[in-house]
Amino acid sequence: MTKAAKLKATKLDKVRWLLLYTSDLALLLGLFGVLDVYYRWLMGLPAPVAVIAVAFVLSVIVLASRSIRIAVRGGPRPTGMLAVAGTMVLLLAVFPILFVMPVWLAMATPFIRRRTLLLLALASVAFVTAYETLVNGFNLPVLLLQVVFTLIVVGGVLANLWLWRIAREAHEGEEAKALLAVSEERLRFARDLNDLLGQSLTDIAARTAGAEQALRADPEAAAREMFEVRDLARQTLREVRQTVQSYRALDLGEVLASVRAVLEAADVRCTVDAEAGELPAETRTLLATVVREGATNVLKHSKAEHCTITIKEGILEMSNDGVSGPAGEHAPNGLGGLAQRVITAGGALSAAPTPEGAYVLRVEVPA
Image (tube, rainbow, N blue to C red; front, side, top):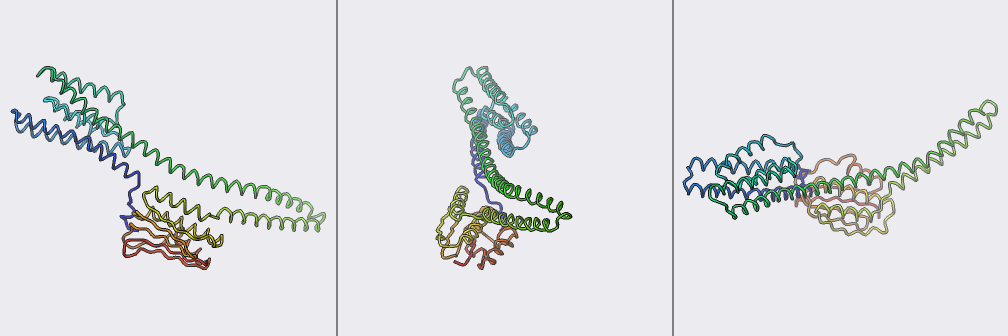
């Protein structure tokens, strides 16, 4: 598929973008600091100082946004960025520009302890209140404004970081659950083989040892023993083949339901119309394998929003949108290998994109 299709955003990516953008909205409240500087300029603040103050305010907001993105990616603490932004905030505290202090606190939120954050927030509120009291007397609206801004900006970033941790843990839990299911299935198959082969191979080894001991004294008895060993080995081989065939068997109905649930969980609307009740068990298993591989390709190689699966009269068609550009060669362990299995079963498999931007996987098997 195309490079753009491979870069399809996951649900976790969308959650991350949502939380980052809402954090940016909270940080943008710091732009009220620009209005504060403008008001002070009208009141007589020198223009060069006002320009520098505005540049500081904007720089702190940009650095805070960058810092939060580093935290979400799990990067190391950006000590330099925190120091630079903190220096700007201290310089702006001369006025003071109270709107920029909560922005720096939000910037530091992912990298400091909650107790330290609380102490810094209280210190910033106390500083602004004391400064305003010394200059103009106690001003309750200024105190309330500082508290409200701190709660909105810092609290919003804290809530988003908490939601991000929950979303990431949920995503990791889903992956772990899938891996656990695969591991359990492999363990089940290993136990079945161990139960099947353990006793049979032990019997074969014991009979072979007995035949070896009897070979010189009674060659005929040794020969009979080896014939029994041969029959036991053939029986064991048949049982192993039956076990493997049972292990490989897939229920088409269950696979269709599972694929639909997985696709819809990935925000891909899935429509299923299957009539395969009269198909042989081997054919149903083959179609189930194709559907499962097709769903994997939809998730990995497209930006699909809708997928349709139809099975009628031995013909499977699986189509999805969100495809652009030519498709690559089928992987030997993917559709390429399935194509060979379908051909061996007397059918045909084709898979290609359409000019309309869809991708159609079509399988015809003897009905």
